[in-house]
Figure 1: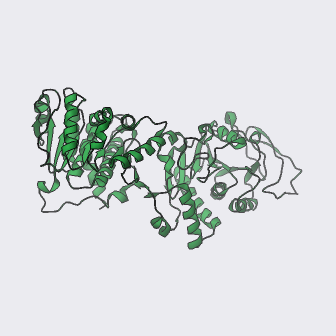
Figure 2 (figure 1 turned 135 degrees about the vertical axis):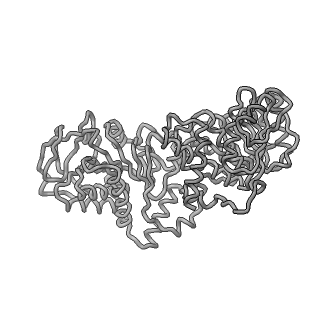
Figure 3 (figure 1 turned 120 degrees about the horizontal axis):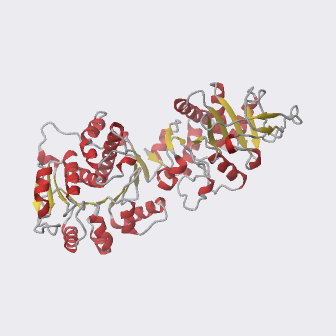
Length: 553
């Protein structure tokens, strides 16, 4: 799936309206219907919904959702925030449609004192509805102007009623600001956002949590952003969803297709992509009936040292389980019997040193090389790494201590073979490129690093990033927090090495490797749990992951 900047999404919306053709208010109706269907799927009819809508098109989306929920029999209360005194045309249209409904409760809010969710209470200045709900706090209903139009028959009336918010039954739908927001939230809306966050209710954000920017939030005010439990995002996930510091705002997100024009989506250029099953099944190689082990490559893995042979075992097993034809694992003398016993399918290459690797003379016969898991950072190992970088003319997969050595000797960066694949976790990358203030800054540094040294960066974590020398970035869709466990990275190294040896490009080896690694983790988490997941589980479930993936081919 292509991902776009919010400015591009706005252009795609506009193109769809002009070329489908469809009116903007009808496109809003279409989007809101998708949101409504997802809400009905997620929540039972005994839930009560409080919709807090802004005065722009995101607010218009919220008002349509509120109308659909109301017509479906849900309990609905709507607060419309008069942020600027001017409503967008589509938002105004949906306010007018509200007027035609009977018994729907809505209020226009012009200041933060007009609304409260504190201590389980929700109150506001009431502008509609005939039958006050049975609630718990006192509200004075003063009928004022609605979007510049007065309701003369009610203007001087007043009504007192009580509304109780049960945080277990009430759900707040945030439709205040959409992805077009470019300024930090201030003023009375920021106070309302904080009241919503403090309400204790579950929160659903439409398209993007209000206050969050679509890309860079480095200078944003994190105190004034909605903390959603669910984000129902339209057509595309927003790029900011993929950065760790924003997770507490986005919560669990779902992408809802709203039928934006395919021609403009296909033609619009972007450097961002989301790796899903449909993408991966187009790059995976099918095996030929008459193939043999020589066709699937010979990989060399340099791994292990005294006390760290587990890393060599996990990486070797993963490499084999991913389908490599032949695997040679180079280990120190102390690891010979261990690797031969634990992984009999491996051909062992034994170093002259007892406790760590120091040399490997013949690299030409291998189709791909991986180095790093458990090798330590001894000076002689450092010299071996340099020797390999200088003499090797093919991409190398580098992980763990291989990365740690490079971070100690910056001159090694200029020796890296073209299109090599580096697989750091965030701290390892910081040691390579310098500390970052947040994950977005780290992402930008990784893009610069990949372009400067002509390498691929697999920046591990939730939605691991595959960052390319040409500036493209792919976010992975598989994996779970249970994979944050010792040895998980060693498994990934073996997987990517295997794919590289089988003839996949550096890009496709990285994409498929990360995807299948995460898919295996998801299978383990579903069958056992995230908490009990260990790295050897990932290896043992690679077969199920491949079977699940290739079933759709």
